[in-house]
Amino acid sequence: MSTIIRLLALAGILAMMTPAGCLGQSSAQPNQTQAATKVDALLVDLHAVTQGLGDDSGTLNDMASSLQGTEQSNAISLIDNIQLAMTETGGALWLIEPYNKMGCDQDREIMKGVLQARLKSYTHLLDVHIDALSRHLAFTRLPAVSQVVLRAQDRMRAAKHDMQSVLDAIQ
View 1 (cartoon, helix red, strand yellow):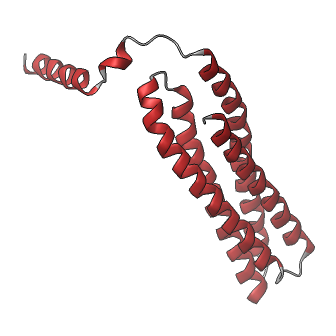
View 2: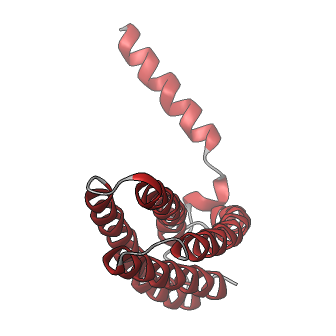
C-alpha cells in the first residue's frame, strides 16, 4: 500500500513540475523541423570530430611513450590540449542533442539561451587549444607528431565551424 502512495505522490510531483503549455503541444513547427534536420547533420560531424580527436590523442600517447626529455614533455602537453578540446566538443554534443529533440517551445526557448552561451564559450576554448597546439608545434622535431597535431587542429576548426553553424541554425 505504501508503494502505491509513493508512486502516486511521485506522479503528482512530476505533473506539477511539467509546464501546462507543453502537455497539449503538437509536433514541431516546420521551420523548427528544418533547423532540427540541419542540426542532426552537424551532430554527426561533431561526433566524428570527437572520435577523431580521441584517435589523435591515442596516437600521440603511443608516440609519447617512446620519446624522452623535452620531446616527451611537449607531446604530453599536446595530448592534454587535444583531450580538452575533445571534452569541450563532447560537452557541446551533450547540450545540442537534447535541445534538438525538445518539442516544447517554452523549454526550447529556455535551453536556447543556455546552449548559445555554452557554444560561444566552447568555440572560444577551441581557439585557445588551437593556439596552444601551434605554440607547442614549434618545439616538435618529429614529423609524425607534427602531422597528428595538424590533423587535430583541423578537426578543432571543423568543430568550431559546426558549433557556429548550430548557433546560426537556432537563431
